[in-house]
Structure formats: C-alpha cells, structure tokens
Amino acid sequence: MSYADETTYRVLNSNKESTVFWVFSNMSDSSTPLVVSHHHETRKTVVSQDFLKECTGYLHCDGYSVYSSLDGILLIYCLAHARRKFYEAIPKTKTTNRWI
Image 1 (cartoon, one colour):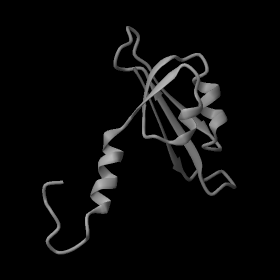
Image 2 (cartoon, one colour):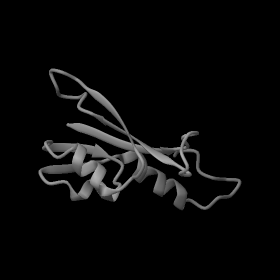
Image 3 (cartoon, one colour):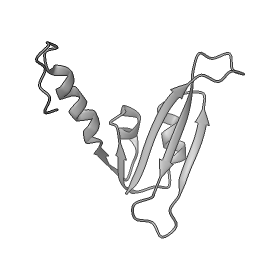
Image 4 (cartoon, helix red, strand yellow):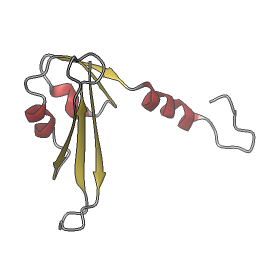
C-alpha cells in the first residue's frame, strides 16, 4: 500500500499565493521504505499522474479527486476525513455530544 497527500503553503520567494507540497510514501509493505516530498506550483491532476505513473496497487489518500484518474490504482480513503463530515453535521449547541 502507498500513501499520498498534498498541502498548500506560501513560499516567500514566489509570486503565487500558495504552492503545493506533495508527499508520497510506500512505508507499509516495502522492503525499502520510502517517503518522497515533491514541491509543485499546482494541485492539478497531472502532478499525481506524472509522479505515480509507474505505481500499481492500493493508494491510501484523502479522496482528493486527482487520485481517481490514476490507472492501476485502487483508492483507499482516509476514514478521518469521513469522520470529520459526520462531526461537522452535528448541530453546534452547548450540549454537543462528547463521544465524537
């Protein structure tokens, strides 16, 4: 299984408002574990397609739509992101449930 995530951030030497820090990993089942950081100007589909073009198997990610265009990859979505949607659906009152 591989993992992927991307985060926008501000680069001081850039004219763009934000750039993207992509992180890819094969930590769970590789005899040679690897974590790769990749800086790019965008979050466009082409970045994930170019970077993961040789990869096959499972990819654990947050459900960002760019990953669904990858051939030979079965997406495994992060449950923390799904849980957050349920938590956000709870009415915000002073007696908010503490079990979540």
